[in-house]
Image 1 (spheres, rainbow, N blue to C red):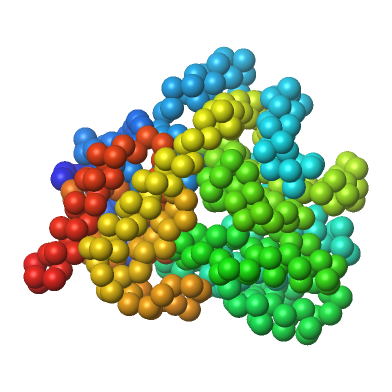
Image 2 (cartoon, rainbow, N blue to C red):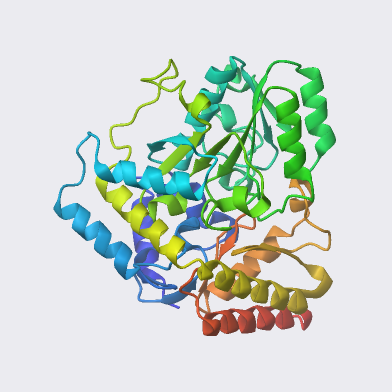
Length: 429
């Protein structure tokens, strides 16, 4: 494939942006390639500035559940733009999307719209502390909750990819109340509660970890978190920036049958526009200004274009719930084929339309086991697939996303290439 134009743009970008990108994982550094500069997208395909076409399994890191440029979603955006991009004032669309979210995700009795997942999580933590009048929170090693100071401790996603588990520029004081437990390890959580009795405001967790690669919760782990937080007067926060409206129409809360105290959303809730939301029990959210003393604000929060796109996306998903069965079936087919192709030399974790292949012979159930994966082998696999028109996350520690736009033919093509790569490895090619 050609990459001259992407190379030219990347060289220019490095003069103006750190690493030539606006988000670290886009840099392709860990796979030793030049990032592809994308020009347009449609359905399950993206097209770069050199004219190359790819089957896309990044889906803008999750929100493209209906596929790129979905007609009714694009129409909603266009119509909203014609009425004005932003007012900094209340709109009917804000009320409508909040009503839809609350109906589909009952735990979110009251909510506040924001502009990103990072902002949603930061604000939810503040509200939890204000409600409980406690300072400490528990997060899990390898789980990523955005780049706010207090949560960049043993983070996942890009922070893992660049092998920097703690970010420079974060003062020690900002993280002194952040306690780190081990995902899928109940004892580590119990020990933190015992050592900090009456001091923990909340436990925040990705119900399905998806920023150290996809790591599923062990049976009973989420129920345990629900129980121990209730017993200790702490709040349980589900970070559903990735799983919200992707695992099911009600997200992970519905999928696993657990009602957390608060939920954070992003990605699909804006249909691809920069939107986030946080919410939960009415009594908790009532501490947020102007009702309470927890301050949070945003000039562009709930802007009419983003809410219009989110409304159309959520309405479509709600009225076409069969999509979840279809994308789950296609992803499971991919996962089974990968297991057959790679045998014991890889592990494939999959749930719903989320999937990761880890190049290790050990089961991947937590942060430590993700680190046994052969990242150099992943880079070879990534390059092999990229050069044949399959666009994957340029990191071992990210998810593959399948959308409603992916056809069975797309899945077959991907399986054939992955099988070809596995065969080439076996024969030393």
